[in-house]
Image (cartoon, rainbow, N blue to C red):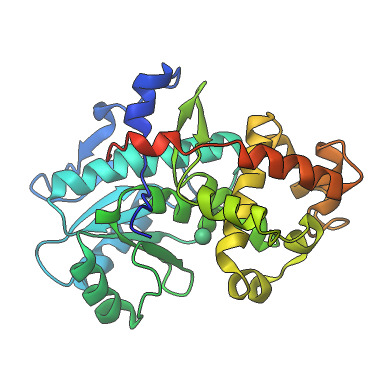
Length: 318
Ligand SMILES: [Zn+2]
């Protein structure tokens, strides 16, 4: 559907919602002292277990494999960002999308940074994305937006599609580092919740988005599986069967919990009880105070059918 818009709208929402959080300040940007002409910038050295020297070495290696002089590199801990848009724009993505999202995800969910230095490749358009994904990683992307490749230690994005997918993909390496046994429903539910997000009360907040109409149709057609089935899905079941509905169902379960103010508590409780409850289903029952999840599903479906896509009407690119 061409009506799908994945947008990341923190600036718009900052204005709309009178957020309390502070925007990353430009004063965090420091050109590398020993290389003032370099397009590498050091931003915020407060996070992660890696030293400045580790990042410097990593960047030196990365620079050797840059496909063209158009690419510039920005260190944005715990990531290294590399892109072929103008250096100022790459830097802007690093600060206004990546740092913004990382700070807020860590505030609410994640304690550990990814165990390795991961690169975030921001390709300027579809042609660059397709060409370089093949050239650098030997991959044929299955999505036009971007993806996380654990084997390549990289997030690989077509940034012309907006920053929303980037925020979605940032969730995955953090989940891997903090909750490696997290089932696909929560990993994708949280990732896709934040593919359209902003800031409310100083916290990251997901808004309704393009996944809603298809989910509403599936609900009307009685094609949405019970939550017991969704939460028990392993990767092959989740990604291969009715993938679209699985993502959307997970997203709007997370959205529901967010709107009820229990999403962060659910994540913490599930994380704490993952051994006894590896799917999260029992923790869900508890947090929703609902033993009969078929009753909950009926209420949730009614709630989802009442939602609208209003935030899509004011897209603002980062
Ligand atoms: Zn994902």
